[in-house]
Image (cartoon, rainbow, N blue to C red):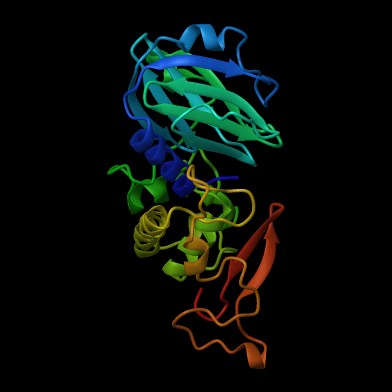
Length: 279
């Protein structure tokens, strides 16, 4: 599933490629997603002008001048393709085509775990999809004290706490592992057992790793592609994720003597860490 850097990359690409265009035609070839695309979706948004773009957690929100906003989530395998004109031949899983005065957006989703709906702009933050989201990692209000307060009663592992979207929104499995490595914190430590300096450092590392990933266009491990079809390349900069048995950067751990990056499973998700560097 695309995490915050991938969603931010896609949002930015749509904003750059389509901009504040008018929607001139919409085709919904399949509306059976995680949440059904409304039957009047095309009718409601055709003729409207795009006036804003934002990312909320792992959702793209596109504001229109008719008082509605699109809420877009890409699920496990969703892709947004941008082209100058409507494609003459559609790919198998091209389910929604949005033609604008400045190009065409094609929503392709093989597994259909994503969603694309509209709602009144004034009610976006109250929408059930978004009303439970926690603070954004780039919100100035996020600091060590905030994180300590949110986690003070949680004895679950810190890695699992970081995946709780009600605590911090947008962090997924890859970037939780990478941020904990950067902060030198074991993923198995209890969330409420960190020191004040560790909470502060963790917030810094969360932002650092997300910023680097956005600059790299995200991480491509399976299905993710940028809207131009190219791959993100932050996976080439991962320090620990998916690198079991390897030596981690800047560490004395030795794979030859049984050290190196280890993999464990937490709450059904793979976690990667260095037992030498992370304490």
